[in-house]
Image (cartoon, rainbow, N blue to C red; front, side):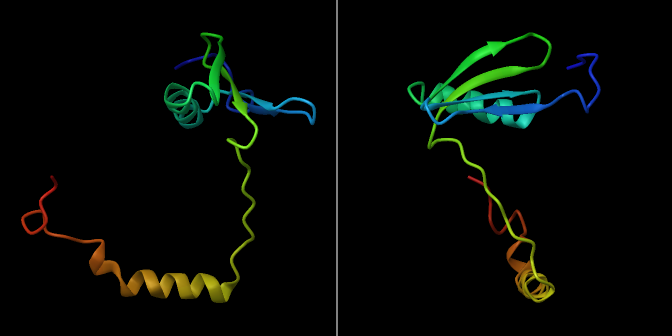
Length: 104
């Protein structure tokens, strides 16, 4: 969707305080909007769409405890190499012949 905004202007803002049990998420991010919209349709008591400005930004209210932030430490070189070696060792599991394993 064209909004006339630059990528820098298309922000995601997350607001919460210690008093309220709700978090407000305002975003232009399509993936996040889709995930929150689906969550809101599945769990209307936990999340709801508050606003759609028609210009690409949607706002949601989500119950605290349902929306999370995840911080991940950078991998050490040793851990990165171990993960790479493991993935290379098991690449045959990723490749399959469609005739041998048809999708149901």
